Image (cartoon, rainbow, N blue to C red; front, side):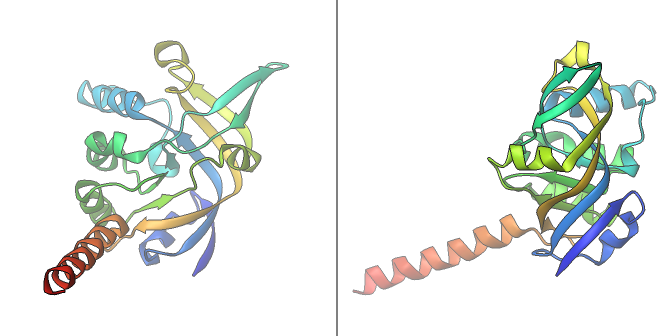
Length: 200
């Protein structure tokens, strides 16, 4: 199924999605890679508040290429970062900050899938190498946080998007994980091939 979602208005609709669904997203998102994830968790442990509300946005695993012109930031490219880098932190980010919608590439593990199941959230993949296409959907940089501390790619960029996609749901709110399903299918097929080779 294909869906056009507005964030944060349509966050409750995530609970009905299934792996394989195709999404286009408009509204608010924030970028965060591994250093930003670690910083968010450390701030939470210290009792410090973030300057934005992650629960009302899409979390995008991305280190955008940006430039500043006439006092405004412009996104030149915004391809996804490999999400496995964030697997170590994602469960805590989901639980501590109410994140329900994550976008990246390459899939995530069962620990993240279980946290998303409890949160009734999803992980969706975006095509790697399509950073210029993504940037066309990113209409406005609303803010940037921790630029001096982390540097541009690792900073948290708050962005207003319009029809960002296509995104493919790879972990759904029921905990189905396309990566795990694919691996299990591959292992079954591999065993069948080896059995045939041994019998021939």
